[in-house]
Length: 267
Image (tube, rainbow, N blue to C red; front, top):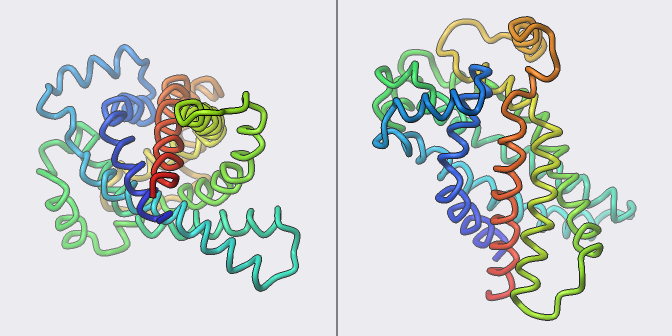
């Protein structure tokens, strides 16, 4: 049930927020202002607006299914077989679930390539991109950018599951299904926005690493230093696009959490 609810929540979210994600991606990759990123998408045309949606659709439905499902399974398993405090046990379960999600890195990888206008003429679609990467550069190329993904997934999962309950308890008591839905949306949205902002630099580094095709595999530190220098050594430039990411995460994780909790009750 938890796996199914997580998948359905992901589909709802991706369908609504994908265009916002594309604007954000251009800002992460090129350090553009919001207006310039939107203009770049307008120039690409409406037919390219949802280009690259299949990888995040597959990746998000899979990873959110694992995120919610494995968290419940690992929690039950660890609580049953260990005597550690519940907070520590659930945090470990969240980190393990987040680490397992990283097996779907190839979909994030291909999504990055399809969203980058520099590769529009190189890769026709998702299947073409997967095939060319494997044939020309080998299986390892699928997992370019794995480092920042691992650094992001585990800690963010632990904070999400650890804070979700306490935040909801701070909200006004809900007595109807609609009120519960609103509370779940607010709870998920606030957490998603906060975590999205906190881990934003990791996504900036990931986008840069995954936009490269072939060649060396530079370390996380090397790529971060390169971006830092390119953006005049200013923290504000490293967080360019973070405000849009904040609002997208607010909407995205609000939808995910509210949809997940609603389906969990219905099923």
